[in-house]
Length: 310
Ligand SMILES: NC(=O)C1=CN([C@@H]2O[C@H](COP(=O)(O)OP(=O)(O)OC[C@H]3O[C@@H](n4cnc5c(N)ncnc54)[C@H](OP(=O)(O)O)[C@@H]3O)[C@@H](O)[C@H]2O)C=CC1
Ligand SMILES: CC(C)(CO)C(=O)C(=O)O
Image (cartoon, rainbow, N blue to C red; front, side, top):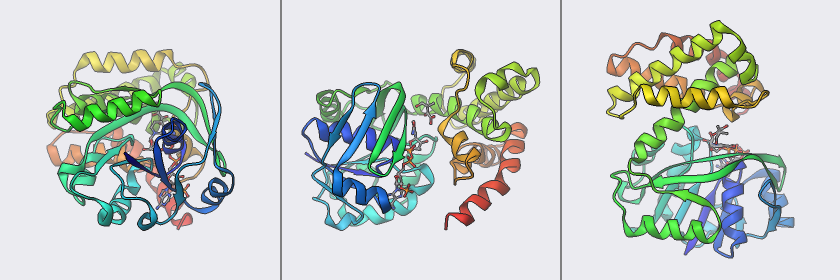
């Protein structure tokens, strides 16, 4: 099987690196200094699960150069999906499988707007990893895991095949009964902590210590649940409590990746997180004042970050 990993950052670099290290045919699309470093010295992964270094079958910035892929794993940020999907169009065959691993609730929908629905799976992942320097990924914490499935939750042959491939590479993975629910459970957590974390610029323990901020965080999560419910996702109070159990158990000093992007003045997934909740809430008649407040406060900084990264 030919595998293409598009976007060799924290997520694509770790999971793609593991697949390549297992001897699978992995090509990668990267860019800039990171691309140059991988081409010259291979991809180095420093991981709490064991360090390794791999030379993928091919590393390039040109999609047209890679062997026609059977499986494409998307390691880009969620806002990059539309431009990358357009670029991928010419190499998508009838049986190509596309697996998005982004945070956010509408990555599948964004892909379907551009690429044939039959090619697209739904997915997400868990890990804390990042590009430490060009050519090097650091997996700092969290047991890495991929959760994925057909949008209709059928246990298709292709899904089971990917499950076997991930197993072969030693990547923990799960095909859930309801992939949309899994995506929304993760989204409920990540959207709740990222926006308020980006706004306050403090780690989770400081938010927990403030009665006001903790209450605001719970109100934000409740709005996300109401939007999800209005979209037919079977979220309920049990999920709210589950998410707050995780939040309450997070070590002092914890920040989420999107929060760190916001704090570092980088383009972030704000539009895909709180922005998405505000827009979907307005469309579906669900009130989202807390998410709106967080979103509107962060929007000018987000716009400035995007202008300076152009
Ligand atoms: N990192 C983590 O711990 C986790 C992240 N996630 C989610 O996974 C997704 C990916 O995040 P993460 O891996 O952290 O992001 P990164 O920014 O680390 O990685 C994205 C990579 O894609 C590259 N890229 C983007 N566009 C192109 C392009 N056109 N050509 C070549 N390369 C490109 C970026 O290059 P460049 O830097 O040059 O833009 C970057 O190397 C996000 O949705 C995130 O929320 C989920 C769980 C954990
Ligand atoms: C919460 C976590 C670490 C889990 O994978 C994550 O997705 C992120 O920080 O973006």
